[in-house]
Length: 205
Image (cartoon, rainbow, N blue to C red; front, side, top):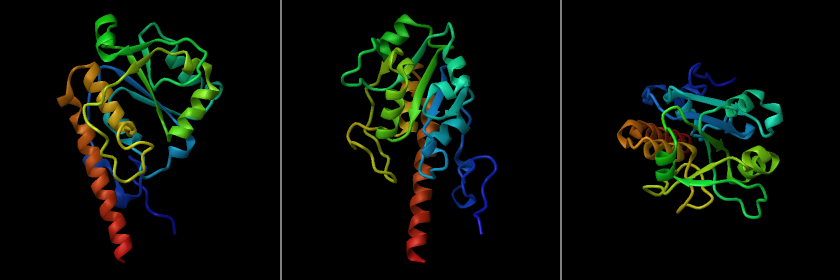
């Protein structure tokens, strides 16, 4: 028998996120390019952004040729930045901007931020498949705190952030408003506590 699924957050009802979600009116528009392996992953965090942020779109796939909606979203006169670190050996020229430079040089309100959702290996594959992404202007973050992602293994516990943590850092720094985006981290923590309790109950039964 299949598990009942929440129609809103698309998670099993026993780990539904809806009671934890707070609506946030973000000024910087967010786009999420999600690797297909992340779509139904209960421990994934992109769903928090999708449910919380008023200006957020998600596309699922690896190759931009199969994602005309994302291509159209990127083709704009607004400033668009990719949140992704430097790739060793990359030949495509791209500019890296600090948060301060973005705020000084561009109109943050109405700007766009693209983030890749997936493991490091999967997001690296997406980058290798798409020269358009490799050539995008990028924003460099200095996280305010280390990751607290406990329910899923990180590539590097000291420097890696979950998708929702990276979005919190980027949006709160770009808009200079950490209070506005604190609910993202609150929901993230509630999700982790819920998942840990659910796992414990399964192990105890």
